[in-house]
Image 1 (tube, rainbow, N blue to C red):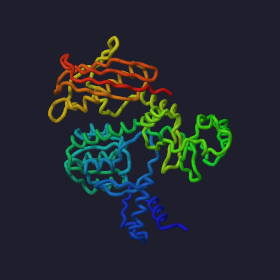
Image 2: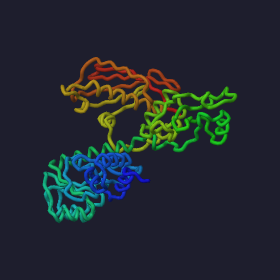
Image 3: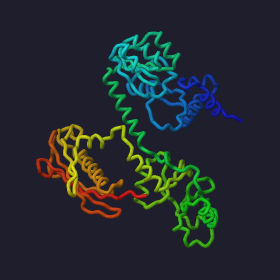
Amino acid sequence: MTTKHDQIIQYIMGLEPGAAISVRKIAKELGVSQGTAYRAIKEAENREYVKTFPRVGTIRVEKDEKRGIERLTFAEVAAMVDGTVLGGNRGLNKSLTRFVIGAMTPDAMKKYLSSGSLLIVGNREEALRLALEHDCAVLITGGFSCSEEIRQIADQKALPVISSTYDTFTTATMINKAISESLIKKEILRVEDIMIPEPFYLHEDDSIEKWSKLLKESGHSRFPVVNSEGILVGVLTPKDAQNASGGKVSQYMSADPISVTKDTTTAYAAHIMIWESIELLPVTEDEKLIGVISREDVIKAMQHMSSQPHIGETLEDIILSNLTSKRMENKIRYTGKITPILTSHMGTASWSALTMLMSTVAIVSLKKFRQADMVVDTFTVYFVRPAELDDMLDIEVEPVEEGRMYNKVEVCVYRDKLLIAKAMLAAKVMRK
């Protein structure tokens, strides 16, 4: 028998993307209590059938199957600029590919308008109509509204028309920053991207002979162990089973193993595997096994990503972009000015920013010295003298200790040949 909760979920799934959803409306249309309607809407939100956006409300969205590129939606843009949606609500969940500033004549504007774009423009009726005709959404700045004709075209084409009180420069800056952050997130690999779903595994009540059989069938040597409910309870490795002469898997497995979720970053998983000397990490959701990742796959994925061109700009990228580097005999020297991003509110170099600067150049240098990715183990910093805005710095990174897996470098920061800070960083090499 279908419950009222399930009926509401089915009703929501049957709505067109962009349809507004409210507790009161669903309770009235389906004849259920508002409490039942609320719980069902929250469940639909967990399943990604609906989303709630500030100043926009709760709307039906297409379930976001994993996409290769993460983009902003028009609903997110509307929330970001404190906008009011004047029309085209059904298109709020569509993705923004690029935005166009409308400070040009209509003829010049045509060549820049395309499907998935967002035109940012003031109170120009002709430009609004032209954008919608080219399947382009509209953001009206200065708090202006639009005519009824524009609303009707927007509704018909499911293209949002948003009004914001911010000026054109401010809205463009906010959207550009959000797109950059979105691109950075896109570049960050997560465990979900590389995990092996439906992996080989053992039950805790299986005989140890089952491990030997699975070893031959799969070609793997390490297996997660689950209980009757599918909950991860252990891991069985060759080291665990080397002296096994019979009995159950639960007698030999390593209990309470370290695990990660599908949303864990690959970099974090790599750190855990290197620090704890783990070859296989189970992936869980609500404590239940959903996949595994191997150390080799994790490091291979990270090395692949490090070789790709970066589009979004991180804080480290910004810091390094202001420095020039020169390779010397046994060290690397970086030279650059203290920029506003490195200063505190007093105008002197921020200690936290200098710490990031030293650790960043140290790791970059180690990668150049060893031609390998590194994981920071220890980092010790000493500050000697202050520095201020526009001071020219020389930062020298010199290897102190080098081993097969372990490396140490000294970082010295000079201003006018005077030492102002010094650090010692030790790191481990990431090997497959």
